[in-house]
Image (cartoon, rainbow, N blue to C red; front, side, top):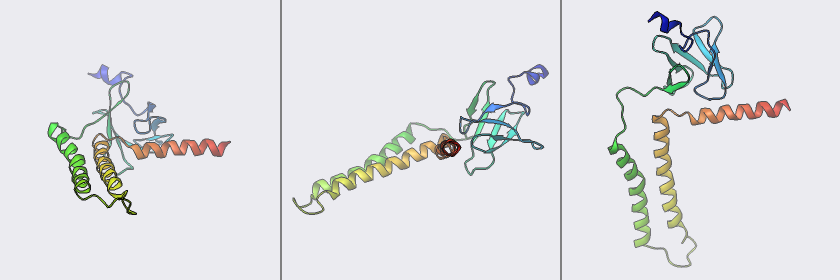
Length: 165
């Protein structure tokens, strides 16, 4: 047991690791603190060395990762599992409102040549895209992929290079 704790593949305070959030920078211990920070996205992380877990401290998202000796793996939230029923509900959430709008525009079509004859088709497409966006947003939140934080870090890197030139 003591030998495993001294192994170099354990997560410890003196190490430098790839940032699990932006995947571009490196995290290292902050001086005089037991927290880590990334040199690219500048986020602060709290640690639990006994469980080998890293949690983001400066975000409202409850993101956490576990060190497996080589890289970070996302920690699933306890007590939540996705099943086939959630997939069915997600498909119904996207298809049913779109079908209702499409059926209404099929049964009551606009007059040919009217100025707003394009509206039912666009409304149907907009309904589909809006509900699909909601479903994708929920999936991204569940699997803890911080897409906006990732794009913000890329924007910082781009502007840092642009201002340096």
